Image 1 (cartoon, rainbow over the protein chains, first blue to last red):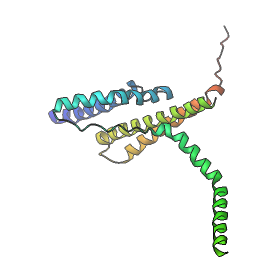
Image 2 (cartoon, each protein chain N blue to C red):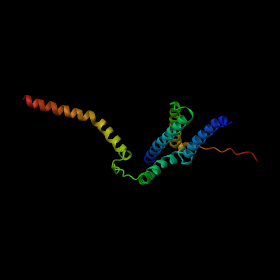
Image 3 (cartoon, each protein chain N blue to C red):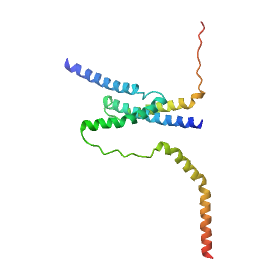
Image 4 (tube, each protein chain N blue to C red):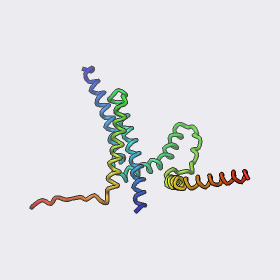
Length: 111
Length: 75
């Protein structure tokens, strides 16, 4: 009797855990539209430091201070693309200029 | 208008990242619980997440041009 119940109980537990994981994902808006999904990142970032503080207090040890990175890839991306493409487009002209300057210098040396 | 396009791209990438992570998480849960820690449920979850993100992005980019029709039933 007990031998037959145990596998069923195991399966029921697994299904509950899996279903719970899916429900949590659905409930926190992870599976919704674009707006919801991009807001979740903001919420997670805001909730992260208090959660870390709670855990540190619970375990009672000091974590080294998280270094504040002043560089945000999101903001730098556009200017990065802009500078790369400008450099590429003015590349051949610049190379031509430098080559001419170099040749001129060599000519001057040869005189 | 270019501003709106940029915002759409930002939303799209953020949302795709979230969906990918969710798919990975759910895939890992299912792999550990039901499929004896095989790799394929994880890959499947990643694929589902990527697909959902792609679909949302598509919907977002097409949004001003999508027309919604309504069926009016004869009374």
